Image 1 (tube, rainbow, N blue to C red):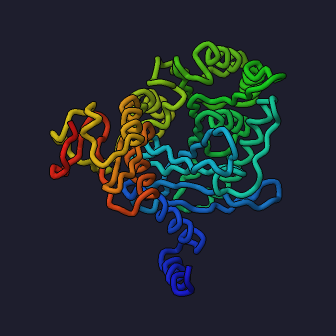
Image 2 (cartoon, rainbow, N blue to C red):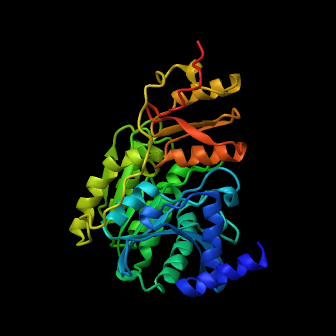
Image 3 (cartoon, one colour):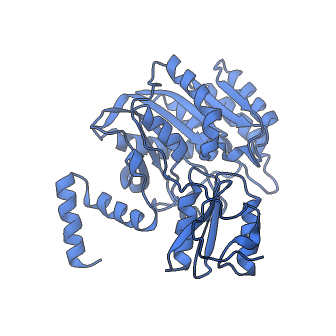
Length: 390
């Protein structure tokens, strides 16, 4: 960055009231990944203090129009295999969009050691109860920092989480934090593969211990074909939790695509979790009616360029590219396949809008203009000057 660029960012920070750090982070993120302006997406480095130590958590924020204060959903991410610092920031776009529609702000902090958050990820091995409490420390630190913002309604807070974030949310429930109304658990838990760890029983004990120290209502979602926490395990977690006298609401839904563990991150999962969540929030006296109109994601119209499964019709591709398109056809919607005249191609599937990821990946491979060939089950290619191979 040049000195002139820095001065421009500093001026923008003064004019908008945002910190220079917020402006710089948003600029860096925007250059690599388009921010969703329809729900006012912003990425900040949230300064937090935890056990006397200072950290910065990479935090994604979505807000309705206006100054607030808004009810807050603080949503928490899971843990992928590998180095946590290489994990991408979570956005939970489908969940965030539905909550923003209903007037909520959504904050998704990446916890210590994840993505661009500093600090080091640590855990307690097979001790699931302590693992949850350790992550809940990060949730509390992030929430305390967020409550300093005047757009947050301090009296109407929901804590949610998926996978490891769901376990962390349940652990956070024992803290009786002022203003927190409820917990939402999307396939919460932590699996530890390897010898000497009976992680399932440890997880059951963790849920039982959390229930003895909370009175917060909670809503749980576990799918039949969840590769981590299936229905039998979910029922054991439920029985352990309600044995302490706290009865959560369990939505034990059926199979979801190839793996129900990803339901919360998919736009196709909205029809599963939203009806139960609306009823749950309504009983709590929390907002449930849409109050913000959000523009639908634009997408090219379907064309008659070729049948979807005519692999030979895809222009510019090498044999490896045609193999890639064949793999793409075996993926579930939502999905998108992009390519350029240079022969570069990329596809993405699942999540809220895989077309963004497909284009971003394709752009890294080629400076030549790229376009979509297919989105979901439609061909959207319009270059009729390219001959179709026989």
